[in-house]
Length: 181
Image 1 (cartoon, rainbow, N blue to C red):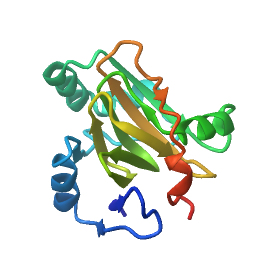
Image 2 (spheres, one colour; image 1 turned 90 degrees about the vertical axis):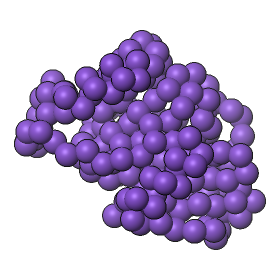
Image 3 (spheres, rainbow, N blue to C red; image 1 turned 90 degrees about the horizontal axis):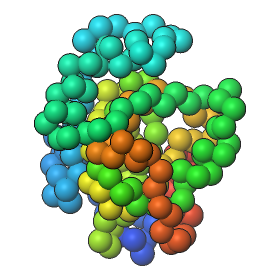
Image 4 (cartoon, rainbow, N blue to C red; image 1 turned 60 degrees about the vertical axis):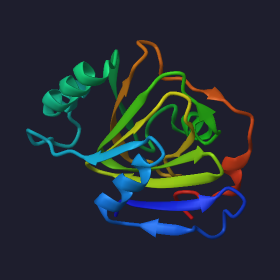
């Protein structure tokens, strides 16, 4: 179930609030400049479909976002235990980083935990199938795909080459609950 846990950065053991209703999650994140919504596929997807089939299923929504918000790049990231770079990517995504460009992540299949470090708070957003989260450039964040990842995600960026974030050097991600906790 999609959820949002809001923590003060000094108290990783106890969230200030936990939300599970889409409207509450979206409005709470909107207050800090993060867009959150749920999408429905226009056409059904089958297990093992190609990146092109994934993008085709969401083409109208993706094209609308690209034209309205000026996104320059789109791709599909599929992750499972069998992915050859799974361990390296898991470790890299767990470090707090800032993206230089606006970013969108949409979960076609599976789930993952986005942690957003905004001002003195950490917003832990458990995203699942159908969830879209849009992060403004400069948002400090880390992503936990879990020890046994399983997801397909459409990614959009306002920069044509903008998938890599810059690590902040803050160890805050190590102090907060992980996806598998």
